[in-house]
Amino acid sequence: MAVILEKVYYKYDVDDNTSEEYGIFDISMTVEQGRTVGIIGKTGSGKSTLMQHLNALYLPQKGKVTIGEFVVDRKSKDLKNLRKKVGMVFQYPEDQLFEETIYNDLAFGPKNLGLTNDQIENAIKGAMEDLELDFESMKDRSPYELSGGQKRKVAIASVLAMNPEILVLDEPTAGLDPKSKKDLLNLLISIKNKRNLTLFFVSHNMDDVFLLTEYVYVMCDGRINFEGSVDEVFQENKKLRDLDLGVPFSVEVLELLEKRGMYNGPLKPMELEELADLIKDILRGNND
Ligand SMILES: Nc1ncnc2c1ncn2[C@@H]1O[C@H](COP(=O)(O)OP(=O)(O)O)[C@@H](O)[C@H]1O
Ligand SMILES: [Mg+2]
Image (cartoon, rainbow, N blue to C red; front, side, top):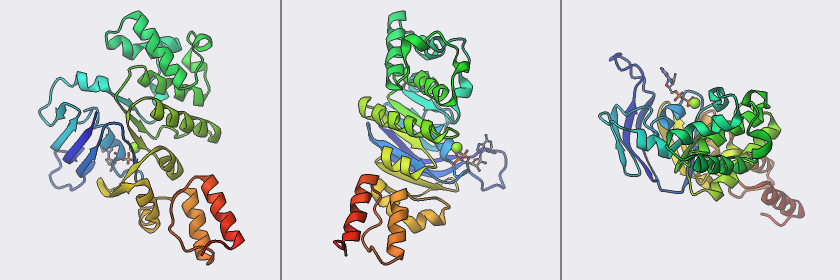
């Protein structure tokens, strides 16, 4: 499903006529079906407020949100069918696990969709497989016994078990240890490739955004400050730093090499193998 936002405004304190403080302000974006977009911006810049418009948890006070065939504005009602198609993984999603067994936690959403027991089990197996969670050994265990990383995966599986067409991941690796973070990011990359999802990824980690997404929106004070392909956005190292944001590791290394007069090419984000090759070339004197 494609996602189109047209001049969307959302203010938390609607009664405060004096305040110019918007949660989000004049947001327009078009995301085609199957695309993967990153949303970056410092804390309080409006990322989560924006994401909660994608399943109509918030209705825009001005402007219009179109998700596939669903048009959402202030007057929209009956949004249940839209919410079935948009999977939301909120920050710290494991806080919403509440059933006694992992199976029941994962069955909750599909049951609400009215699926048969066989369909529910298949949906759960598919979602657990995508997150490398072993169905047989885990289904009857309590989600509370799991490690932080495993709990997070169960929480994400419970969203995938509903077979969403759009998946929103709001800081999905926040608070995990480095190994669990890396592990989860790799799984998200393979899930993206396997399921034909339109994916929104909110993150503070620029390397993760570079590895997972194709197009990036940079938010500041409730607005989109700038946007572009990952390559375009991450070459704007000065703009990003002005907004208190980081750059991918590779860009940071290229900045240092540039500062030392060893490199004067573009500050393009790249994977570590490519960076290593480039440094090898520089040391051999092949790069000017
Ligand atoms: N429930 C809320 N009530 C009032 N203001 C809120 C609420 N949630 C967020 N805000 C405000 O809206 C702005 C955007 O917040 P948020 O969307 O959470 O940003 P981010 O996810 O980028 O950290 C901030 O100024 C924040 O204080
Ligand atoms: Mg947030």
